[in-house]
Amino acid sequence: MKPFNYLLLAVFCTIAHQSFALAEGDHAQTMVLETQYTMSQQRCQDYQQADAAMNTLYQKLKKRYAKDNTFLRRFKKSQRYWLKFRDAQLRTIHPKAKKNTPTSNLGMCRCIALAAMTKTRNKQLRQMLMPEEGDVCALPLPAPIRFNRP
Image (tube, rainbow, N blue to C red):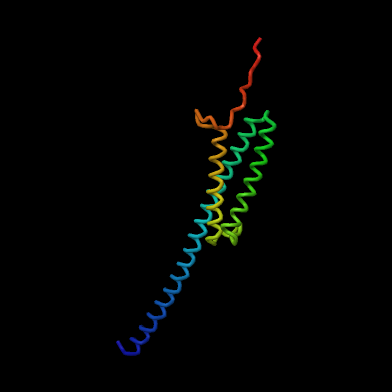
């Protein structure tokens, strides 16, 4: 092989290597973004599931205590206050997180915090709905409905 051919081969290999490295770097950046997007989506889905469970528990409690107006009024008020607390807490621990930032770790962190706080609230609501047997401090169950039999 002539020296000129070696030179062309070397230049070609260098250009091909740099192009491949650049393309691989772009692919790696895309992979990172896709991974962050996927993680954010999963954490936000966790929050959405916890929120749906909380709404179900809330409706069950309202139904169970439908005849106790005092309880319902206080329960609705406590839930509104809890939502305000949740939102204030979120602004405190993640002040720069925006609702729809799927490619940012801040969006993921926001969803993680929301899911954790909502799961804690769900535990509280479940305890109100199904108190442990023998718990003398638990919310009293409503009086059973009595049917008059002829």
